[in-house]
Amino acid sequence: MNTAVPNTALLDKAVFRRYLELPQPENKIMATYIWIDGTGENLRAKTRTVDQEPRSPNELSWWNFDGSSTGQADGSNSDIYLKPVAIYKDPFMLGRNKLVMCETYKYNKEPTATNKRLSCEEAMNAAHSEHPWFGLEQEYTLLDRDGWPFGWPKGGFPHPQGPYYCGVGACQALGRDIVEAHYKACLYAGINVSGTNAESMPSQWEYQVGPCEGIEAGDQLWVSRYLLLRIAEEFGVQVSFDPKPIVGDWNGAGCHCNFSTQVMREPNGIVAINHAIKVLQTQHTAHIQRYGRNNERRLTGRHETANINICTTGIANRYVSVRVPRQVAEDKCGYLEDRRPASNCDPYDVTDALVRTLCLSHKEVPANVDDLKEVVPNRETVE
Image 1 (tube, rainbow, N blue to C red):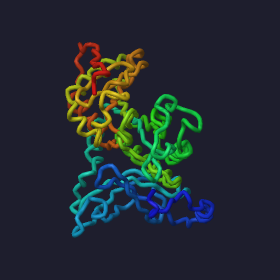
Image 2: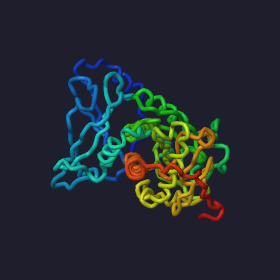
Image 3: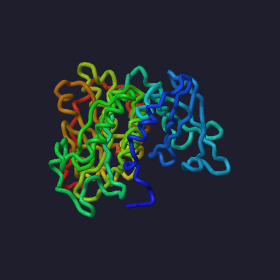
Image 4: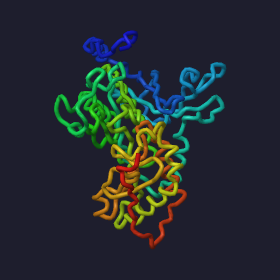
């Protein structure tokens, strides 16, 4: 264990609460600006005081930070701009205080390399008439401060997978306090969390954000990640979005993306769904490149994944790239589930890719499109 870093979980929360309950001046609001750093995966944040409660991000001014400390600028020209783009209620400071999701811009007002939101918003605006909806299934792993999975025997392993998925009990559900605190905080903040559950690997969990239309999917998922990291911080626990945090016979972590357009949700929308999957199969390599770092360690054809090299499909099949839920097949309308994105993906990049491919480039559906034939390899032979 790294003893040089204090365990924040040992700080006296009762003492902190005394100060949290102090009255706040009417004309002073704390606004915490949140942004994606140079890794494209990690979040940073800092807080400023504003003189009135903002009702929209347009009422907040741009700010800046030291980009040389976040991998986004050189020290000789280090200021990076923060542009507020979405605001949420702050479940930590409470009251009228806000969390502010931001885009990042270089000194010349050009977007930074990790600002994927700008392109995503352009795509969503262009496809607005299609009404693209997203449901994002964020999986993650809780780790102790030494990097070993939370609740696992030190230097050892728990029982094999089986009893942990949606499990109940002290030896099955590891870290539930963090999960439920996060759930409540998301709802308070205004994040459209639709559910949560324990995953197949012990100490691994999932929550779902959506349905959200357009750019809100990316905004809400990034802020929900911030909330998760902050809440785990208070418990002295780390959160990993690594797509394969533990090698061996353990499931990896993904961020499955459920996607639909208005025509897919209408009667006989299965025709549009089948066409969309055929298009995705032709664009597989391009999408994989945008679906998260180190995803090849997860997409092996085992542990409820497809092989990263081919795009497969099937009904109610969790060993495929793009799954059609059984209820959708029966109702002949609904949505598709893209199971390829990794847990560390940028949701702006994923949703942007789907909309540009399915709404802006290949949106015309042939009138005589055939029912989709499942392309499902034998998972026992796909390594």
